[in-house]
Image 1 (tube, rainbow, N blue to C red):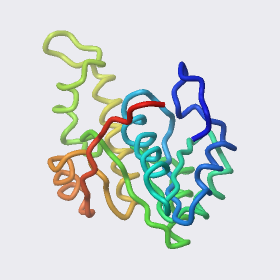
Image 2 (image 1 turned 90 degrees about the vertical axis):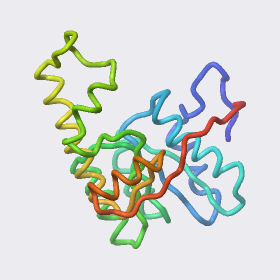
Image 3 (image 1 turned 135 degrees about the vertical axis):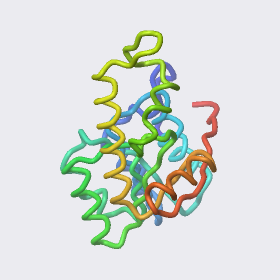
Image 4 (image 1 turned 30 degrees about the vertical axis):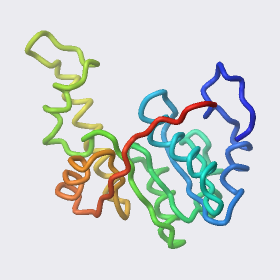
Length: 193
């Protein structure tokens, strides 16, 4: 990995730097995410790419965002595996998946929460501390927002060939609700830079 200012998140690299990482080795994995963050993105994208890049002599991986735009089509064309990280459905994402599948690239949906099934939204809302609610009441906009998120995630996941989940429980739910094969890849901590 290129050297970084240790006060910055290590994934804050330019598109050019991320492309260099991606193209270093023969087998290439492209992670797609709407945007980076210090929680899900860090564990499911950056940690995974970092470990693959530092521990494998044959696999290179990098991460890309929706805002990278048209450049992503070239990345997808060079990818052996495209991993969609917890991203909702959009016409841009649908086009990337179509390009990948036409090329024979395996497309996987990576998820760390039960955010792809609308019937599970009540349970999800009860576990989150980010909603507008009184002690016993969720606001209508919370329901609408999270039901929309769940449906959008479901559509994106159904466009993929399989699911990567953080737990066995989540993998079984994905297999049940999406009728796609699922594997478990737990979160882990990367120490150091």
